[in-house]
Image (tube, rainbow, N blue to C red; front, top):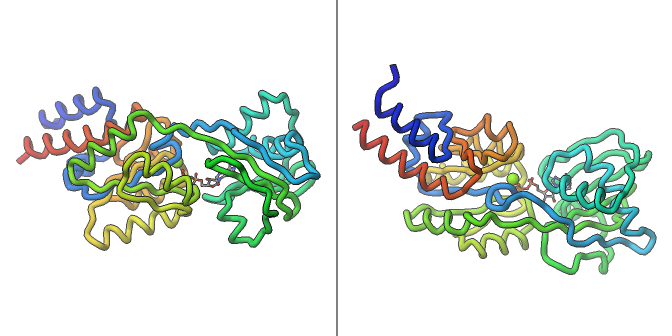
Length: 287
Ligand code: ADP
Ligand code: MG
């Protein structure tokens, strides 16, 4: 039989948007000293809009969008959805794709119309030493992906995402409870800085690859921190598993939900505070 306190707290949690997959983790939520938040899809809605397309002289915006959207159709990333939405609006017809492959935490690659294409973030360009003509830059701050055709950079697409309305209060509530709140993201330094400052977070880790998210958590744990990780993506799964408490966003990927101890059913970051309060109450009733 399920003990009464457990039954009551489970019902209370469910009514408040928390799906508890691991009871011990739930009860341990009172011990959290640090929470890491993934950016895209967690603190933000993960709904991207294309704000700008920029290309070298030889390519039109339309041609670049056509290559990009054709390949992004194979990807499940929120960036892909934003690019497809734009292509649909512009009534672009797609080209044939083969050899599609995701480059974990960095982008995608494959063949479009028989040509080798990579769509990647700026970190990847730097790492692979792909030259960027000086003028080939977006004019506004945002998430930028570049299109590399047969090893040559031909342009890029800027996208904007929206911060969830509840994120700022969620962070300030947690900070009030002396929990330090950090962002951890695969996106660039510039974007990470802007969003984490706007949310008044304690800091950020940017340009972090999926396995590095996990390593970062391990490092914090070795320093004695009791770490919760909140995320939504496939790329967050290793970190969710490593954290003392893994918290998945309900609207996120199945892999994140299956790896996490707790799921925020309403995708509301404010529910993290409820988790801590309920965890405390349940603990007090048990002892
Ligand atoms: P986050 O940690 O913020 O959730 P991700 O790890 O999912 O971010 O992605 C990190 C970066 O990898 C993106 O900012 C982008 O540069 C690149 N990227 C990932 N998937 C794609 C894709 N389908 N198309 C283009 N770029 C991608
Ligand atoms: Mg994410």
